[in-house]
Length: 189
Length: 147
Image (cartoon, rainbow over the protein chains, first blue to last red):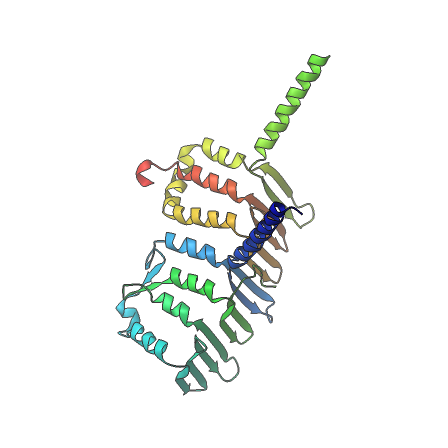
């Protein structure tokens, strides 16, 4: 094979490999919500590409939502400085921050493997279990705005897409099961 | 005879080109089947190009209110439709309950709605590109001060 042809073939192979890598890197992530009630035979599945949510959110300017950010009033926070609390959590090592037992209800808030984890377990019949796992990067993005009374939801969605496959919320209540997670598959199968 | 053949070829060519143009935006499909005996069955397949054309020639008085109401949401609708055209096929929402299934999905450049219950089944499919053009036609009806 002539040298020119060999170089051309090599260049084509390199371009193909690069395009494959770029395509894989740009693969869209989807937010999935699944509500299941086997006892009633009901289920609701919602799938939303995060890129779509990221592009749509800044166009909605209604109520407290504007340009992908939510304004929260001091009244909503009841005087709690959320940023100060999160700053403290960010620099703290993996640990349990809150454990509470009250009337058969166990609540646990912890930082584990770069995630903020909340577990709520309610004992007894009809009790519910709630597991919430939020990557700290998402929490950081949420509070990345310059204004103290704003949450940057659009930035949080971007961070969520970068965080990869994550189970965010799982709620088991009586016969109903709710799951919210992010992965790169467009369907829930 | 040769002249007649050329004339026929010209007509056939024009017809094919016209059909191609008419179908360039895809097809809108509506299917509604009632499940009871002697229930109606409606099946319409129409070129999607007719949707924005119909919007363009629709009486302005009839759609001006809808046009005004859609104005605040135009950036959102535009962003949603643009993103929809870019992303892969997927189902937005699937609802399953005893006796009823609802599915809203993006499939092959179209937005597809399927509703299936004990009484009837409905299937609606509309190309996203035609929907975007129709939305722009609707938006253009509002007075310039509202846009």
